[in-house]
Image (cartoon, rainbow, N blue to C red):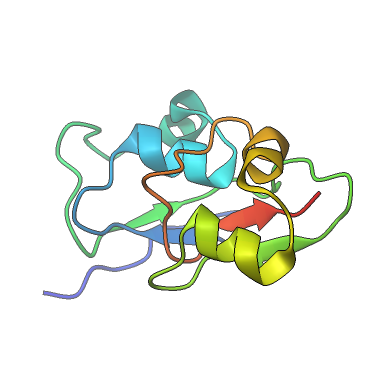
Length: 112
């Protein structure tokens, strides 16, 4: 059964995949669990469903350079580092709250 997109002021959505939690989604988009709960009041945070759409906040995490890498299937911080010439440590420092072992397809990574 296809999930419908809930009303969302930002027009930005997250499509829940296997293993997603509100915490991992919030960290991936630079938000908080509280903000996701505010935007998605009908969502049970302990029972996310694969294929479910969640409304995301409008703002992206601050990124002084204004340059982002959009995570594609198979991307890791190491591969992004190799492609951009930016060290893994610098990528982690520019993206506080990121889970290096759980990048999400579509997640935006700030490039310092």
